[in-house]
Length: 111
Length: 114
Image (cartoon, each protein chain N blue to C red):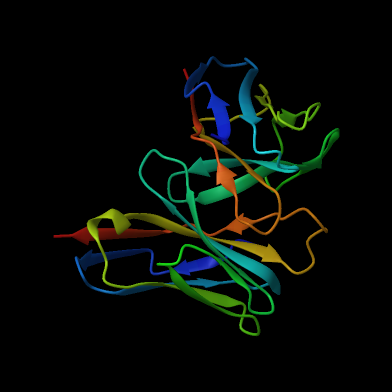
């Protein structure tokens, strides 16, 4: 079955550490997105990519970085510059005006 | 800018109806609706496009007023499985071609009780 796989499901980060969240899709979708979800805040866009080797900043890109070397993969790195990274991170993809398919999310906690 | 959803929360008894509203300050090309259950990923319900086209689940009903930049989601004869948080996502008319970039509201928490 086609879908989006996010890993790991839970991730713990120490102060000053960079961590990478994985997002892989086998839907053959061109566009991929990373959203951050905090309680009561809805989903906020971090980065998005429309094609391989191209990506754009969203509303809250500071402290994050991404790459899009393959159509199927869109990893997100949470850098030490992100001062409040504890949140639920969701990856999504779409092929057009058919709605987003979301992954099951990664819950990141700073320890 | 983030669209505004109302109400923030609503409690229904099984079989009752509800309307969830989404309002944007920007001209819109499309509005999406998603439902999220606690700890899970959002699930696509419906997309409403400028010009009147709609795509989504047959049992879901929604409207899109392009002039007012507003959309409403209609939940009729509610079931326990309708419980969750409903989000609208808006795509502005001036977004880049092929970006399909959405800005989401803060959500409406719906609880259906027996």
